[in-house]
Figure 1: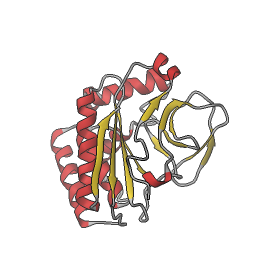
Figure 2: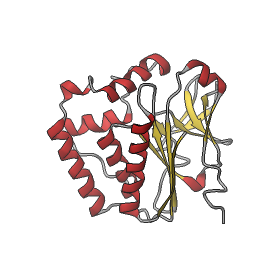
Figure 3: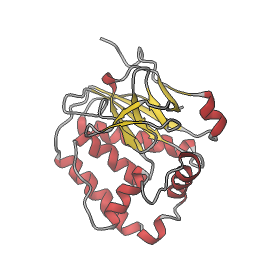
Figure 4: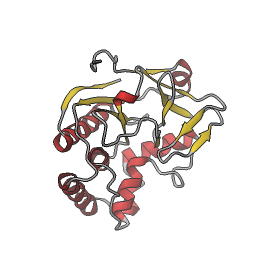
Length: 232
């Protein structure tokens, strides 16, 4: 059986991405031997606790001025050419949902766990079935006509130039806001990869803290062992 060490857990940033976008941190964590369930009282309690903390400490009016939220919005505007008021950064979208008085959709307990960490730290997260990824990963710009299959199965042919996280076979993420159906976590998932999606203006320490928090919540709720956490 292939171990996480054999997978060479890393993300290789392409030279053209390095030339066009200032350096920024990426967090990566590997949790092995998990048991993923459809729902969990423990995950629900975690989300309820963090949602309560958000409601008591943040406001919709002040959210846009938070330095982390601001960094994601600037990244969307300047580098992705996406209007962040129309396509929200993932962490902001979750927080805004809470502040609007809505509940966070319960998906799977592992997904709920890293969503809780994303809300708590304001860092956007990606979670993947590690056994459906051929490592290493590449952060690169998409080629025109590349196919991306979003969670839910909707297929899109990319225009080219989109920032993507991919392995040698497929795109697993439109960075940092939409994950692929091919590598989504399911109840059959045994090994999970978490990616803490940093952007320029957010420190390595903060991204590492968020990635560690996500891995710890997944282990707390789904069991398993945290095999590795690092910043790339």
